[in-house]
Length: 181
Image (cartoon, rainbow, N blue to C red; front, side, top):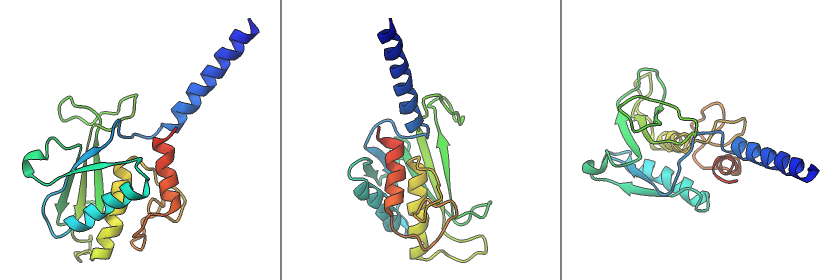
């Protein structure tokens, strides 16, 4: 009888800790298909996706699509705009369901489809440099993967920093907390 109670408590504890590790939204399966339109920023944005893929050691993988016909089939779509109304350098719009155009969160916490909207210019009207676009793209891809902002000095630091143009160990550790058991 005591063995059954202990076994039940162990299983309950194990399932709770597993759920805690997966509390952030994430992708259900890999590779994640990504549509990136042709634009001057495209090479820089693709570089950001590839850096997350390479530095993750295969935890995340992407399948790139460039044809406009494949945009609606892709899980992540990149969109370039002149400026964003909120003054931010990028926005990640999340869609959790395939039903209609509503944005819904599911209890399972998996992404269904995302749009990464990247501004070409700052709120002051100045065009972002290639280095700034690198920082923007790395941060946007991290958010699109479900990596939360934290107190580190990496790309996913709580405050956005245009000088963070490379992933740090803290960024990959945060990614692994989302995707690995």
